[in-house]
Amino acid sequence: RVNFVRLLHEHGRLREAERACRHALASFGGEPLLHYNLGVVLEDLNRAADAAAAYEAALRIDPDLADCLYNLALVDEKLGRRRDAIRHMAHYRRLVGSSAT
Image 1: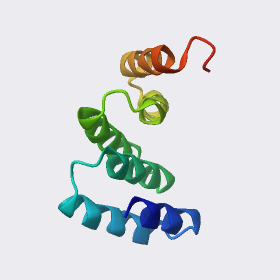
Image 2: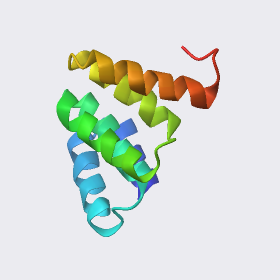
Image 3: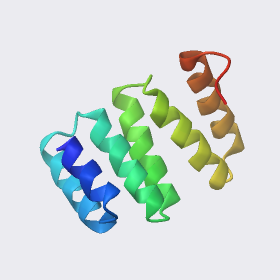
Image 4: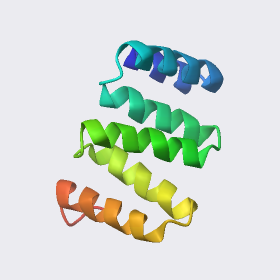
């Protein structure tokens, strides 16, 4: 299901990707990559607050999901949540090493 959502996303079928991801989450809600992928799709749909919520859901399941932390930091910045952005980016950098940007 994760791959199906990614394929739809890669082909620009964002609304279908969102629906497929939400359908998969109804069955497999404990899968952090589904929440993460939903966040990516929502970001591309210019729904930053919804994307942040999806990333946060992924991190509740897997707090060390590095790509999710990075994306959430960027979304936090867009939403004016600077303190959260700094916190998420710091966690990301601890995970991947000090050379991360």
